Image (cartoon, rainbow, N blue to C red):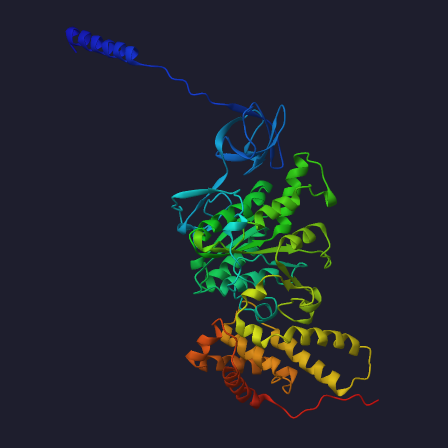
Length: 516
């Protein structure tokens, strides 16, 4: 390059620098920065963030976040939402100025996500246009409507005797391995073609158990109306703690759009233990059974969000099925008594019934629905009014008969009838039944049509009766779903069909009488 051109280029460069310097206006953006003081078991202690608010989201290096939970004079106790092994003492911490939120929307249906909304399946990125805070106030009393629409579980024993309504909170509790999750999954499977969005929230479950549930939902075609929120057993306690709140915010998005939603929390026992762990690490004072004093509050503010909204707000509903685990059938423990008082009823599963092969192993005597009776289909109310009483009498008489007491004919008939009721209420796992199928069996049970059939042929006769449900007239089938009770003509039509099917299974037999 010639010397003259080189000189002109340098002059032009300096002129541009001079103009840039003259037009530059410095601006300052304050940024509050804190530092990690200690890290242990999902809890981080931070100093330097004097203006941080309660439950504000804090940002750590390596794309980690935490919730400011303890606001002390010189430090903040933070619940970490991720692996604490990625942090070191001295790392910088920044405020975000917002609370924790989660992505919501139609794109989540059919997906498996963590409590932060990150996908855990292999279906790629989730597109969403809206986020909602995970902690939201429950709807006001005046914004709620009565629970009047039934939630059909597909389980005979539940729909007939412990019915659940849309917008209700029904607790499922029992010892380990008694079929609690199976009842919830059956209920989800039964929502096929019922315009219901389902949310399954797994809290501190084993990866194999969660994978099994997801595989069953895929196999039965339920994932096209279901989404799964997972905080596995090896997740941080912070993720376990926020999981049900995040899942509820996702469900509320659909409820506020006028849709009916079912949410399953599996299970809140692990959620309570995760919160106890966090509270003790944050040095909050322990209360009964080492649980913090606000354990009732954190569950009540979660479950109060389940409701049926008024027509002015779209008429959507959120039905909650929380699951908890008892120890040695002790329902008077701290967490069970808390949740029983919060919910609108409970389904208690008995290990004794489970060992006897009575599945689902629901103990009718300890189970109750405080709302569902008003939302139950009238056809159920008209034929199952005496069913619970007859079954309860049978259980008492069966215990009495074990002592070898001489029984009269009337007592023997009640025992025979009760044995058929117990066999008739059994149901295979992941095989929910439609309303016509249930009505056929329940009406045959209450009418005593099964009483002359040997116990060993009950399952066979029931299967034959279920096949005949497909032959019911369309008009009759439609009336079963109506808001009117079963009329006498329809009752006789169903009984005639049932009697004809069961006639081939009857055997001439008499129960053995006491020879003494």
